[in-house]
Amino acid sequence: MTQIHINAYGAAVHRVQGSFEIVTQEGKTRIAPEKIRSIIISTAARISSDAVLLAIENEIEILFTDRRGHPVGRVWSHKYGSISTIRKQQVLFAKGEAGGQWIKANALQRIRAQQAILRAIARDRPAQQALISEAIARKDVFAQRIGELPQAPTHEWASLLRGYEGNSSRIYFETLSELLPEQYRFETRSRRPAQDLFNAALNYLYGILYGNVEGALIKAGIDPYLGVLHADEYNRPVLAFDMIERYRHWAEAVLMQLCFRRLLIPSMAVFQQGGYWMEADGKRLLATAFNDYLTEVIEYNRRRRTRLTHIQDDAHELAQQLLKMET
Image 1: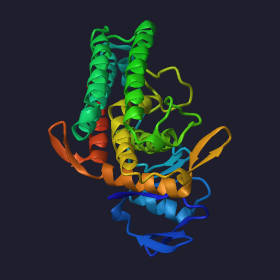
Image 2: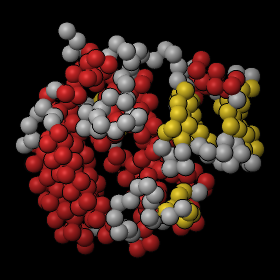
Image 3: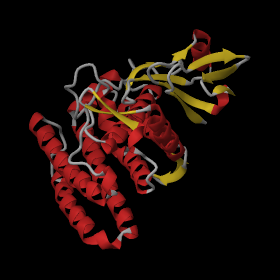
């Protein structure tokens, strides 16, 4: 099963004889519902009500995104788990030691994954071994500080954790920039909007990842708007922000490979409104590469699944943990 990304200007999705028909300037393509996991629709594209109903009948989620690739709306099947049965446990989870342990585990997993990416790059670039070794050692310091934090989340606890995570990530991205070919290097991590090609591409990949994590939580019956570390952000899928930390390195690994192979070119982004935004051909490149990566079977938590399935498994495991808290 795959994700279908509809981001070409004027593209449309219809239902024809029990299948989805995708219409673009290049022509028409029909895809059977059983081959689709989700449909992601960007700006300037359309989907018919019949196609929406076909997706609902086959439990295919439809995700609407902004130009950065971040989800702004979603249609999903009524068969997904009920949020109301688990919301009370989420509140208890967010305020207690269980939530604190989960957040700390995510943060530590994020640091270890970043270090693994740096080590993988070092194997192919021995001349930069010293730079990478220093970055890994500096990140170990923040991993230790996170591990020493108390279990129960508090305001002070959250501030410290954010600081440790931020400093660790700054070291990581500064190192990545030095390792990249000259044309992709950047001064700092930038988001809204991106200030360079690399960050524009990474923001777009993160947007795809956000959509998958949020969708996995919904399918597991979890409310993505009740978070732990990001609990105070109004009207945002804050639990998805908490959970995505363990997967961000997947987006970074894909982008680094595209850059090392020089497949991402400057014309794939445009400078508008004070920042860089991916164009249709850039989005197509990123979405295709990331979809292939996410549907690759890997071993994770002692199970061989696609990366997308691992995300869903993690969401279901979190749901089970929450349900066990019921009194």
